[in-house]
Length: 431
Ligand code: 4AD
Ligand code: MG
Image (tube, rainbow, N blue to C red; front, side, top):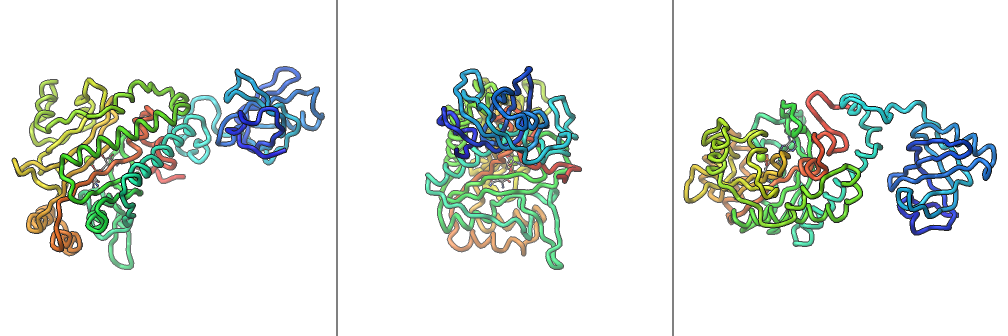
């Protein structure tokens, strides 16, 4: 007898195995009890036939409650109708811990109840599938960059200054000084790009956004590449190659999970094909005005505008060359029109919103100095950042992608809170 994970069982037909897991559900039909056991790697129908086992094992099988932990021993049998194509003929069964009434039942629960029980909700089928998609995505992200010879540089989480505006900073005491939780690793990546050429960071980022939208988390994970000598056009190409590779990979490897989530994958397929439409900010404004939106040149886009900008191809779109005034201090102006920034946002189709923000970075020491002053940023805290424009300045570009936005889009779910294991939301820091 050997211990086996449920996912291995199709290879073990005819063998006796022991599976350790939790009771997902159970039903009886007279002298047979069907136990669905899950172990994280899959779901297994385990069949307990009263006439074939001891009275003790039968009583234990009857006593089992939802989410009790257990071990079952039995023979793996082919069964084309069962999930995974196999079932287990139970010979022995041990209850490891009998669970008292489990709070999450197959009936409908409200989002607050589920979020309060996030530590248990993670076991549910849909949540299980979402985390598996996230896992595939993060692995594919690292592989994408590693294969292209990018060096992973981890940026700090405690920082002395803002990166993406001062209004969304989480503050903390740092031995009498103030430290801020990072909003983006970008500023620390730029120096690393001078050391390694192509770099990326991938870590948690924090935004104290007093907004309660389905697209905002207080804590989210961002992946950020930064590339020396890359100009704006190269950046657009990189973002497009990146996203199309990731979508292709998830479609390829997460079929079962997307199926469980009832995701219409035909909606994702256009994103596997390059190029993506590139739309100048000015044209985007004109397009929105044409659709009756009350927007004018100089406005930023909200969620409704982003949704309306969607392309009929069903691909993500890239909006380019935003007015410098509504973008970050570090963005390189467009040489053809310095009131515009060489900035890009990528917007996912079907109303999933902005998934990427990026730009070419300011190359000039004097201009960056001026922007720091204009944005009322503390010059002293940015001395090191200015140094990059002093000791061998170089053109460079990069972007950031929030992975929960992408998971939400890929899984076709309605709210970012399900795309991260433990969401941090306005008024929610538990569990
Ligand atoms: O557009 P953002 O603010 O860009 C930056 O932080 C740049 N410094 C990145 C860079 O150029 N290296 O954020 C980038 C992405 C957004 O497109 C979005 O996907 C995600 O981060 N994001 C959020 N995700 C969840 N909750 C929030 N509150 C988010 N804010 C941004
Ligand atoms: Mg942005």
